[in-house]
Image 1 (tube, rainbow, N blue to C red):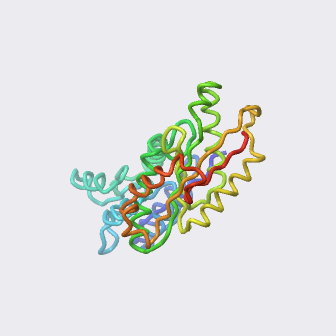
Image 2: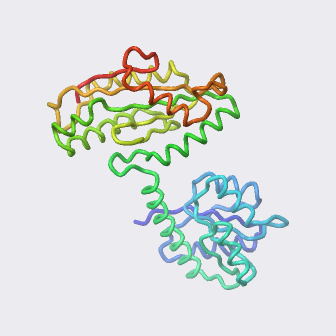
Image 3: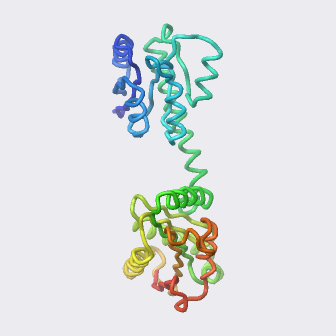
Length: 306
């Protein structure tokens, strides 16, 4: 049984709304349901909600520009595939729609149920392909956590938000102690398993609003938003307790493996601090505490068996 896909129609003309509803209702496989938005603001809000598999957007919404709506949605981060509906059949309209971020455009007078269904299926297939490409570009292949590049992008955004609105967040760097020794003693396959195991523990304990990445080698990085140092440290201690029972499912006899947690809090009081001029100096401050162990108040060493 085909899953019903929600399609957003942004159209202010009632006659065109009925035509689109009839066409979608006549699709052979009937896998789509249609939701209508009639104004610029309503259409933008629904498009940014991320609840729709695809959208149909007219190039003119009364006196407003439908393509301006699309450009605004793309700037805001919307990746929903959009098909532009236009009354004009010209190369200029085609280019303008593509430059605004549309995946296709259809001339209203030439639209048939078959053409519309084919265009929607093409848009959805393209969206799946692009989603896979984004996954490859943003995720670490071994652990499936965010990769370093995507984490750095998010860190810059969170830093800017913190500076602008004077909101705290905690940056946490975690690395597995003596990881080279694990690889040398047990082999790289076991080392990979340890990395995946630590990644799953971290991913399972963070909130939906937080971010965790494999920062490089045996090093992981977390951003905990709206979190001060004390709360972040408490979260890491809870993770250490969890590891008492969270053993690697296939390697129960590994020697004790510890990790060091180093954290730097970014809040309004650190904006003018020499140690935290920008997100990269915060990362550097975090990483420089490596190896200082219990002598550093920003370092917590957790040591448990896998």
